[in-house]
Amino acid sequence: MNPSLQPSPPTPPAVSGLWLALVVGNSRLHWGAFEAEQWLDGWHTPHLSPTQARSLQASGFAAASWQSLGISPPLLENSQVYYPELWLASVVKAQANLWQGYTHLHPIHTAQVPLAGTYATLGVDRALTL
Image 1 (tube, rainbow, N blue to C red):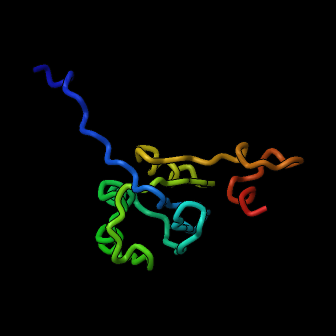
Image 2 (cartoon, rainbow, N blue to C red):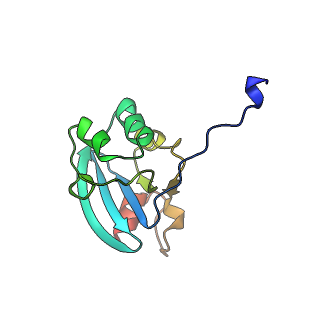
């Protein structure tokens, strides 16, 4: 069989109900874990390197992957959650680009935030806090 015609491996399904929010600021990452519409926990990390971001994505954000980076999100420490939906708002393009290959990514842009009378340079991070 021609290797270029082989189907790609299946994408792991997202875990139902649990999802992560990531707001990328100029100096750090702000993470939140949610179950449906309920906030469960939040934590902050420094900006990640491409290798670190790939590691988290490849593991499906498994607890061991966080721990290998020296990060222990309280909610995920003993969790068996893999491949959650990831909702991303970023004002730092280089950090946003690290997540573009993640299958369950949902980028959020300023235009999607229902605000009237805003100025043209309003960043998504500030729009979400209004």
